[in-house]
View 1 (cartoon, rainbow, N blue to C red):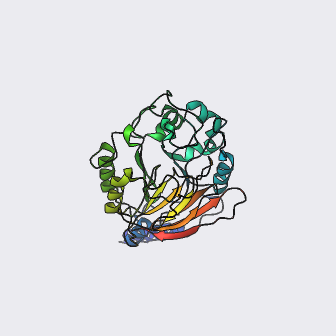
View 2: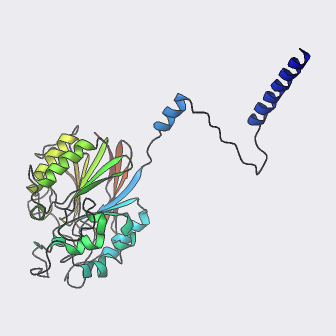
View 3: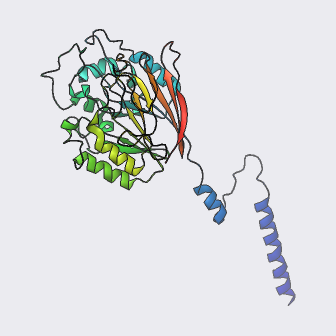
Length: 346
């Protein structure tokens, strides 16, 4: 009996020492033991609800040019400097990244030394000049006879330009999607004749519908080159109307475009161009990457245009939070133009 009592006393003492050691902080320089005890349910919930940190995105289109672009400003050095200074997480190019014909040689000579400095952050969208299609009356280069299929663009950006096609370097789809923090991002190819059309039921539009149905993020941003709505010299281009039907149905929040060489911000609107503060899609035109300015259309600003600037180069800065976004136009050079604000996701 005495032996049994002694054994019990020793065991209790050992347990007391053990728990005392676990509760005492380790001496300086000693490794801290990691507990294998599972966290309480409240701790698990707290971890799961940790807010997603905001993501900073810079965007612009109509960017780089060179000696063949007679009369153009070719301010890609200025705009790339301001993008670098903002230290964004991602950069969106909104088409016509390289003038005049989007050749590999011009990408290497003009785009790469400037915007190519943050090439690893770029998620590009394609424009008409990448396909050697120049429609502006001031184009100084005739691209007829240049290689078809945007080979310069797809070769330069490689897998980033068309992630759905491994190793494609010419005549690629050029549309894809990805996530930036809490946001779903969709890059589209609106050069419709090169991708089997953009209308309802076309391969790209069917892909867009499926992508929107699959990704249920609270916040979604889409970007491509030619704007559905614009007060600029090219004006509103209806070819992406089917895209806008899908955007509106799925609750897309933001659309970014280039093509008109100006900056314009629209109020949220529906696919018909009617203002819709509750469910509408907000569009930005940011064709201010450096090539030149084309200015306001002769007919003036259209409905729902909230801001317009036709003489300033720069880029749009977006801070994407889990359920809202902040915007700021960052001007290059000595321009004093400013535009900023915020909105909530649908």
